[in-house]
Image 1: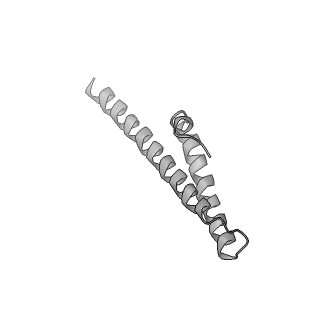
Image 2: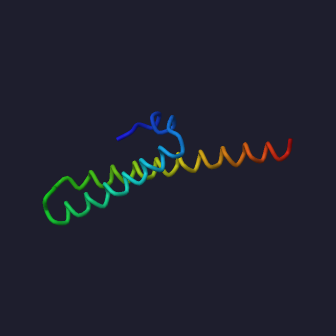
Image 3: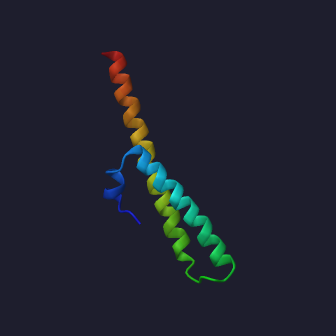
Length: 75
């Protein structure tokens, strides 16, 4: 899992790639926990928090892009 600082240093494409991978991992973990192959149910919560961090980082990047584009329009 990536730390908050590592996530902030990623580009938009990298964040999207990591987000997709994290979502897939959540689905895989849910299946393994449901089928009793894994007992660590806390791993799902940790992954969901990672997804939330990635979504937040993505939103921040998008907002920065919007601010930059609005500055270009005003200038």
